[in-house]
Image 1 (cartoon, rainbow, N blue to C red):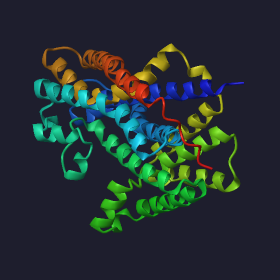
Image 2: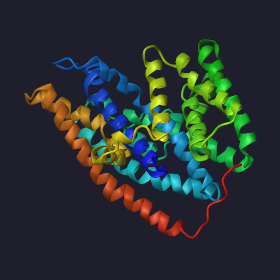
Image 3: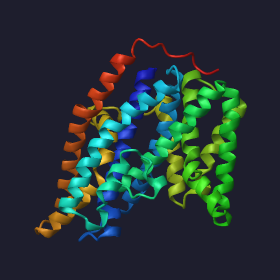
Image 4: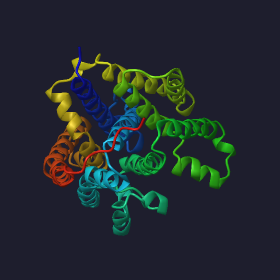
Length: 342
């Protein structure tokens, strides 16, 4: 029988594979859409556009686990800050300098905008992303704020489930009626409640509850099915089916049926996934542009961009991410976690 550690390793491996899928999507079909490649890439890589959706599911799973193990909102906020911000800040600096040196020119941002990216509030203040991939980090940060507020205010799963269920129903309504919403309602739905993506996070929370207890009540099974089914109306075909497939892989992983994907390569990719996500897109575009400019083939440029991104991600992970987390955990270790929400 697969141990809990095996099943969590399967999720780490799945995260690594998804991260690679996102990178290949950006470097091949999406680069071709934006700037034009001199060759065609496999159509299947288009599905990498939706690899981020798997990250959102994983975030719901991991964040609820973290909340249950954290004493209060202040410690939770610090834990998330030390997990995300050191690597992000270094990546912002590297990406800002790289884009100004290599391009693409349409991806440059002013220095003041780069500074605003350090706060992850830049989208709400009408500032551009230093890297296009950062759109999802703003959503992640907003989700953390909502979950900390709800978890530490309610402290009861039954009450929290009602709020999350309401969020799911609002997500259905907003997606179906988006064109009819007023500008204020659309801002609330899209920016503050991110109704196109909230059910992905909430599904991850319910899957964590299942993983932890080994079972769900009948109402929770319905709740999970409702949150998963949101993908069918939120995303166009065939990508909506792909997102449902991501759910299936997630369930297989926490049930012990995906342990065959766990190996040193996928676990390594999983460990680098956050840093790789932070540095790959605009830096990669600049490298691919420069490769074309000096007469290299487009495929050579993609390979160089991938290698550079992996090297940068490795350096950031081992010399920024891990030391920051280690420093924080050493100072946090004497604080006992609160009991899990009932």
